[in-house]
Image (cartoon, rainbow, N blue to C red):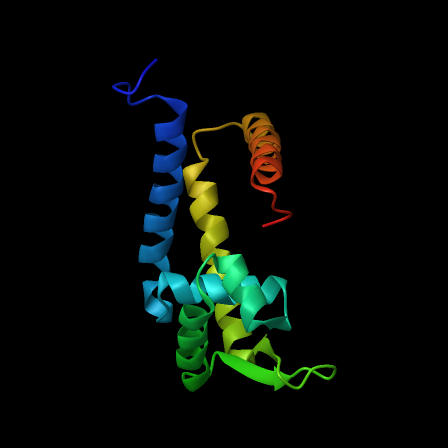
Length: 149
């Protein structure tokens, strides 16, 4: 198996990730969020109170880009900045009630998208696929020096 083979694992993994994002993007379009914004929602849902710097690191973007995105999302009522009690220079980011509702809707769409994508697999194949993918992810995180991203 080589670079000309469409079933090469690197191509398959890349295509699966891209296609899941594409299908999900189409399904959440009605909520009115861009992919970058739904990534912010997801990260802040999992890590409420993250700083702008921490969010930029999670998204693998520069702080200025994260700041502009947060500004837009704050203006649209999705995110609020709260002063850090220990360091007045730092703002902690939190989702608004509206953003939490949007996240709930997005999560239902995400679950349906994954269920639809995995429909060709049996229940035991899904479980095995999940275990194997998690092991590969762990190996890649160790190689990259990251934890739990």
